[in-house]
Image (cartoon, rainbow, N blue to C red; front, side, top):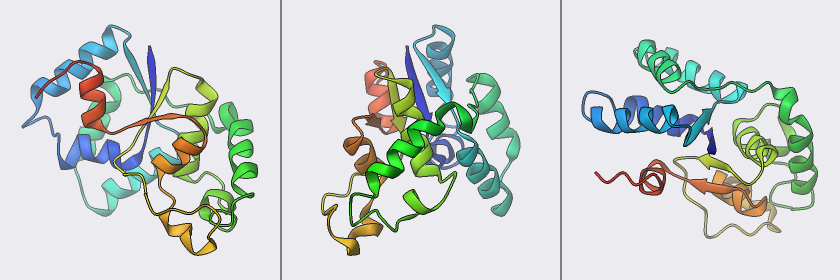
Length: 177
């Protein structure tokens, strides 16, 4: 079983932006079947949950869509304490890179990007971080000016955590649309 640590934008893309149930009913059904068959399990960390619910409120979106996503996909909500040591390890490692030493990944507690990667790392080899971000190809970890170039896929690469977007996940699961 693949355990999937969800990024806020990945959740928002599925629920509201690109893959809504009105247009992609079959896609939602196929994902639900994968959850029921224990092929995949979705996780949302507390920081990502807060980010998603804040976005829904700010943009006056239909919260029932997110609630349906949580219910239908049996989303799990890990406690921050479950992966705290992994988060500390991530922060300590990032302190060794000039691009990251003053970044929110290190400075802020319960920062979404750090949480999803450290949580996935704590799950082991069957974990995937699902994000809508793309890897920054120009990131130089030793350049302090490159702080803004740190993306979730860059963190995943550094910490050897598998990273996908929705399209990659659909392909991995054998779904073609």
